[in-house]
Length: 371
Image 1 (cartoon, rainbow, N blue to C red):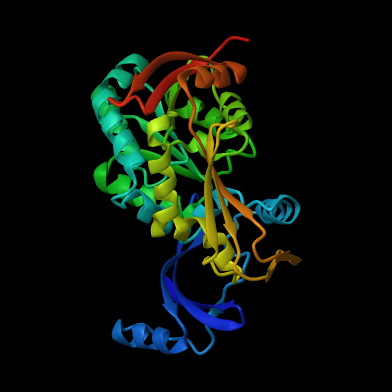
Image 2 (cartoon, rainbow, N blue to C red):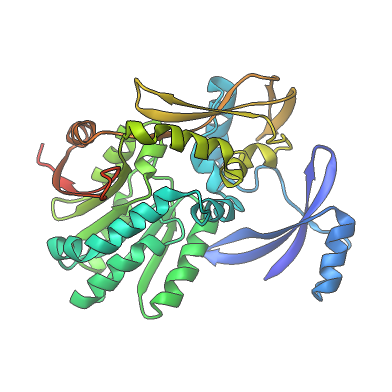
């Protein structure tokens, strides 16, 4: 069911067309379209046979959070460390912003990984055998398609997706149901940076295959600050029968300048990364400072606001000062050796590594190691 709601941004009222649906048994609101100020919103409703309500539902600034813990985490990160965790950029209309990044011509990473999956999906499923497919940070769900198709040749799999964004889960569900109408699926809203998924996985094993193939693709592990914690959470969700397939971008000195320019010049990337600030009325037109940290082997993206800005998150007032940098994202670019060390330190053993032709991207198949 779609309806119109209003939102206050920097003292002005704007309107959104919102869809209400159930995801994993819980009501979730997803922004379908930003309608703009009242005049434009009324014209849109008139042109499309929609009723503009006398008193539209009001959206609070924090309405996109799925739990109070997330609001507290954002306050702590922004007020205490001048950071915005990237995961919050994917909530609500951030899912569409992310799809815009993935589908942009400049986003070479997506096509590189997609081609690598297409070439090696049959080999990977041959190695793993009959298993559930567990998609961690599922995004649009499209990267799981080759694995589901190959697994179906062996036995009808159970597909389970986890993502922090209910809107992203809805997008993945829509894509996969169209592709596989008979696929047995579950979609869970979960923050795998904060906790393991052991409870959900226990129920999965009791009613389906004992073995699972965890997909952790899209360089997601490289986009979190604490990679060790995330991998530990995944290991705590697994048994020795399970496999983890990790997709990660590798360090390539010759491509660093190209990577940096993509982050600087892409309107889609800016829209995604500044989305959280815009929800609180802070313009995203500041200077994007994109650099490569050689010591940490990662791209770092900061925003320097053009003017002072005040925002209130979960009742807490925060001031951003002109030119004072806010960290919006990191993107780790490891080497095979560093990746091997990271996985060993978090309790995994590598079974096989599948490299792209340019050796700038890897799919790494691994298993929990006996400690």
